[in-house]
Image (tube, rainbow, N blue to C red):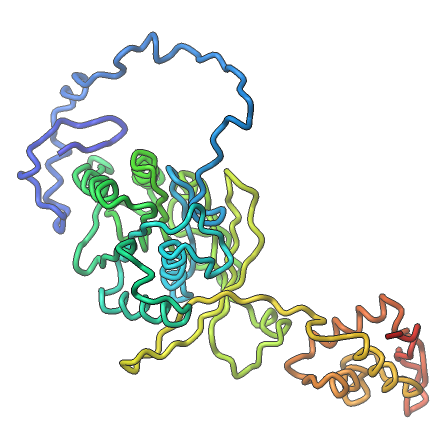
Amino acid sequence: MTFQHGGSLPRRDPSTFDYPPHNMDSFDHLADMDRAHMATFPRMADPDKTLLPTTYVWRDPAQIPPRPWVYGRHLLRGQASVTVAPGGLGKSSLSIVEGLAMVTGRDLLGDHVHGGPKSVWLFNLEDPRDELERRIAAAMQLHGIGGNNLGDRLHIDSGRDRPLCTAIQTRDGAHIIEPVFDDLARQIRGRKIDVLVVDPFVSSHQVGENDNGAIDLVAKKWAKLADECNCAIELVHHTRKTNGDEATTEAARGASALLSAARSGRVLNRMTKDERESAGIPADDLSTYFAVTRDKANLAPAGARQWRHMASVQLANGDDVGVAEPWTWPDTFDGMTVKDLLAVQNAIEGKYPRYSDQAGDDWAGVIVADVLGMDTTTDRKRIKKIIETWIKAGALVKVMHEDKKRMKRPCLEVGEWATE
């Protein structure tokens, strides 16, 4: 077996090792290996030639191959990408739906599948296979995908059945388990895998999560595998505790070397209470909404925030399963016309309703809600935005007017009348 630790250690017969490693103590003998052997390994086949600078020769940009994007602007052939998310948010469901999008070549979540259907390998190291099948079946049901749409392009494995350990840590440091990567490469090439998703990254190795040197070694090995097999590799990772603050990819748990080795990084964040109110989501809607933000993008501009909703799908066996689906932030004036503005102006004329939303039933928003069929509780923030927009447009005007107690208060009156 060949291990990597900066350079290479002496080859040993793989049969002398227990793989996959369950007892880490069985690797402690590596610390006692003769360092003199390391000096016998070649450094460069031709140092003089290797170290000479290569002269740049201009060529027409039209002749330079475009970047080989696979999925949206996140997954790229020959590169490793990282998705960071807190636990229990829906990252595994997101990976499954994105996998189905690539396998079918369909735009399920708003990201383009480049070059048609792809072969995808989902390697989930936490959930049992039955749970993976439930989630896939539910995702197919929600998104209208039939079994005949998959061909032989979707591959799934569970770490419960097939443990994956790509690196170990001994007293001598971190070491790559080369036979594992050899097996991965053989399977990727043999089955013509376009995308490999490893979820979660922390369960794919046994090195110190906070050891930058060790994580750098592992992450770069994944990137090398992607390059050698001309596939895209997605490493799904957890965030550290953020105490309620919005996370970025830099909030990934453990060493920062993982994100440094990736060419694209994105983070998932749960929709906050304020955001739910702004979006007009009813208080009794307990389902999960989360944002996907690509904030590390070495090879493409950082992406705009995309929203996802975890829909509940009931399977024929009675199980309820959460499935990621696209969700669009509602437009403040969605479904409204000039007639609606004119109706509000007619309702406000001569009444001088209060501008402040703390004025109870005297608030102008009560009139707006009544005319437009909204709720002053669940739609409060939307109503306030509508009023502010109409004030800026001159359709409503803020004036000082006496209230019932003859106190002058900021109120609203009609400005420029709307015309149909």
